[in-house]
Length: 435
Image (cartoon, one colour):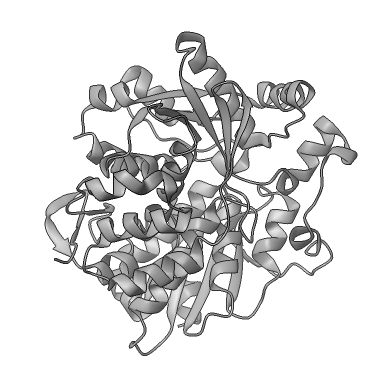
């Protein structure tokens, strides 16, 4: 049986996997969700603790995509994309960090981007013409997508990023690869970049003519591989223990992936969303009203999102019931000063280096444990500290931060980026010039 996908805004209208993945955004501006998600089989749960990350990923991907993609193709896609570790590091009793930055671009986005690139390549194996991948980034997404699609035949990637709001090394990951990778430096915020990407998909004639697809977490194929590592982390706890996952959150794709893992049968004690000053979702969970607004620039830049796309998926998962979401997801927000203090304090106490996003997560875990001291908290550490060199060196000194060679080698490369205003019309006109 093949999987069908529907829009969160029009649940009765279904499309196949190719339409959902390659078109990314439904015409009604909702988000695609799989029609059915059943818990994984008893056979899986008997053996899952002895399975590798990739072996778990294969079973999860099969459960989501069903027969829409042949099993042997899914196995190949997963094993090629999830071929690096996600180690669980225990810092204190019942307090752990899940390191998700051991992929090619040193960020958790590598899981989703590499899976998506290979899935899209398979879905378009018989197509003619060029597939144009649009992606908005607040930092790590763009680098991961650029790396995953670099030199992939039949594709071109257009990355929109906010001018002056990503770190220097993150910017080099977006702007120095060349070949089929193009970078647009938008004079605005991440929310402007995300709005421009969405606006292109809503111009259906242009979208279809340019064969547009998105690599943001609006694309359902980004979320599926991000659910793999929730299983990987949970199996590292003592048998019978359930994790409270603490997730640094911006666009809320990572947390939504955890909710998908729970739908597939993973036992989770609780979810805690950790945000910086961009606290739209924490405010919603406190007050019951969703008020998106312009984002604020912080040192945890990948979370500088004022209108998180995946909130629509979260609402759908909880039946659009505020009380249901509030019962399963807690949320806390913190400013830069406390984030910096936490980086220094945890290094002094444990010698472990938290980068700004992980530090926000650690703060939320500490706050959660004040009232739930027996919980096993797992903080998702989403990027390597060297990607935020200015902040890390200010707090810990240059000697503490090691820059991996695959990042250090970018420092001297020439940045190539096209300036772009935040106006939709200008962006659409530019897209027409490359048609």
